Amino acid sequence: MYVLKGTGIVKDEDGEYPYNFGDVFMYPANVYHEIINNGEIESEYIFIRIHR
Image (cartoon, rainbow, N blue to C red):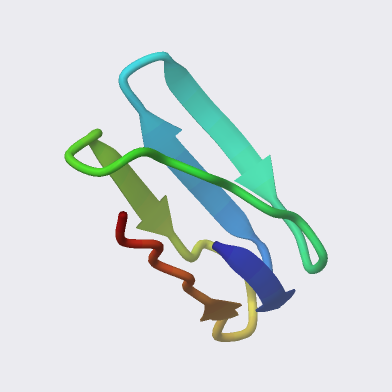
């Protein structure tokens, strides 16, 4: 996930991580993660999925 705009929190099994525009998060398939937009504006992202 590449963050184009906005702020928020990404949660996974290990904790919570704040995000801001320009940040990148990568998760393998079937790994729990959750995206929470808690900023004042709506966040926008680019998601890239790679199949082998």
